[in-house]
Amino acid sequence: MFKSLPSPTALRAFEAAVRLGSFKSAAAELVVTPTAISHQIRGLESQLGIALFVRRTRAVEPTAAGARLAGAVNRGFLAISRALEELVADAAILTISTTPAFAALWLVHRMTDFQCRYPGVTLRFETATQSVNPQRDKRVDLLIRCGTAVYDDLVQTPIGGGTIGAYGTPSYIDGLAAAEPIRLFDTRWEQPGPANIDWRTWLARAPAAFNRTPEITRCDQEHYAINAALAGRGLVLASAVLVEEFVKNKWLVPWRPDVVLAGSQYCAYCLPEKATLSKVRNFMQWLQVQGYTQK
Image (cartoon, rainbow, N blue to C red; front, side, top):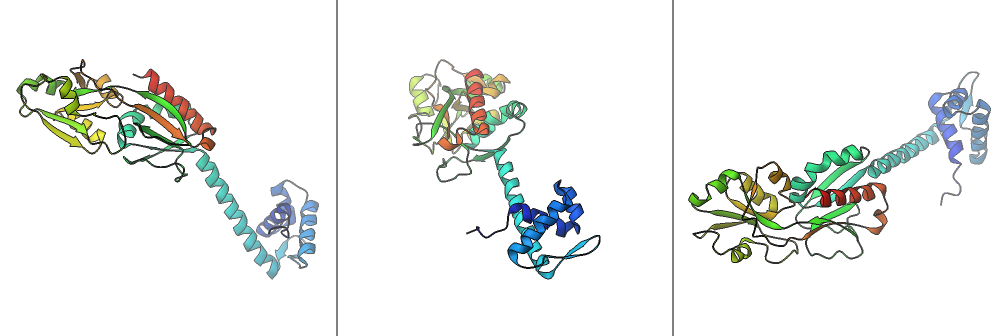
């Protein structure tokens, strides 16, 4: 298809000569001799069978055919340049698909550490409760999920997991005996996950936890339930992984830590062809360290 095209070297010499109006200036820009530029141009004219320049004593001007070709060559080089810039930019952007809760409550708190270690990588989060398929959406470099969903043909890296327990603000827990009504928040799961992670299961393990029937509210997303507890509106049943920072800062405290439910493993997934990319490999390794050391 492109066998009859002139050499890229000749086209670069031609483009520079038209733009600068001089073989000498084109030579200086391309770091070659004026004779080399002249040779490339004459070869191009010979191949096309047309004159591309009107040669004057100290300058050159494109002929009508030369001007027409110059416009096409310039547009072609510009398109190549932009494509290369986009490729380089994409190589520095790591696109991660995860849940809104994991992004807001776990990843964001640790981003400064990753960016200090890998300043050349820009992180882009795409959050949704419904999982994406990296086989179909090639923009996604990494998929982070918690649960029992099976992702065939993807490289899997475990990050870590934790128990599910009850948490509330210190003030709410201090006044729990007098609270009316007692409000409990948990999550309505949209994705496959461990069975029976809800307040009814928790209460079955601690039937005497309350002296009256509590009011249970099910939220569409985990961080909605956790935010309700942070606002002092009640107790939340949440993953220890997601509330770690809040507990560390004493904004939330465990209530009845002797009663916990088994949580799922958080895992990162990627396409096999992306697993060898340095940005993906570094982030995977960083995730594992964060997941297993910051408990």
